[in-house]
Image (cartoon, rainbow, N blue to C red; front, top):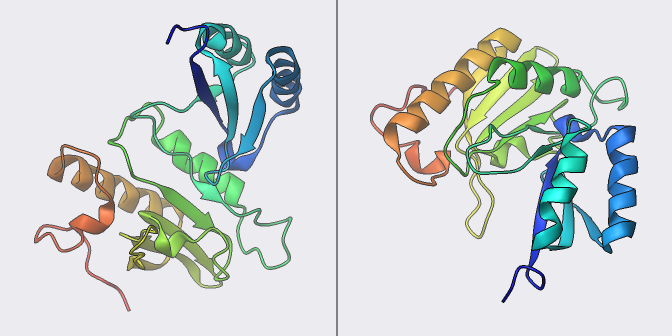
Length: 206
C-alpha cells in the first residue's frame, strides 16, 4: 500500500477537555479540505480520522502553528476531567485549574505507556477516577487519591492512598507513583499490576 492510499489518524490533545476557538476553526476547515471525520475520544481529545498519510505533515503543521499538541508515545497523560466548579452545581473544585497545575509540574516529563489520570470534582465520580491508574476525587474535606484502578474486561477499583489531601500533597504523591512505576517496569503496564509489589510506596487508607 502506498502512502497516498494509506489512511492514518491524528489525535489533538485537549487540556481539561477544552478546545480553543482558533484550533476548532482550523480543524473544521481541514476536515472539509481533506474530507476527514472527527471523533471525540473517551480521553477527551479530538481525533482526525481517514487522513491520507501524505497529508499528515501538512495537517499537523497547520495545527501546530496554532499551538496544538499531538498524542504520541511517552507524552505525559493529560488528566481526564469532569466539568467541575463553577460549571456544575455539585462541583467542589475547579478541575481545569487542578489539571493545569499537574501538567505544569510535570511539564517535559515523559512516561511509559498505559498510565492514565482522572479528576472528579465531587464524589459522583463522573470521570471514573477510582477505576483509573491515578484518580483524584474531590470531597468536602479535601482531595482523595486512588491508585491502581482500571477498566477493561476485568475492572478494578483503585486503592485509596491519600484522604483529604491538598493540591501539593496530591502532586507529590503522583510524582512518587510515577517514579515507582518507572523503576519497576520496562514495558506498557497498568498501575494495578504493581499494587501488590512489596515496595509499593503507599498503603491503603480507609
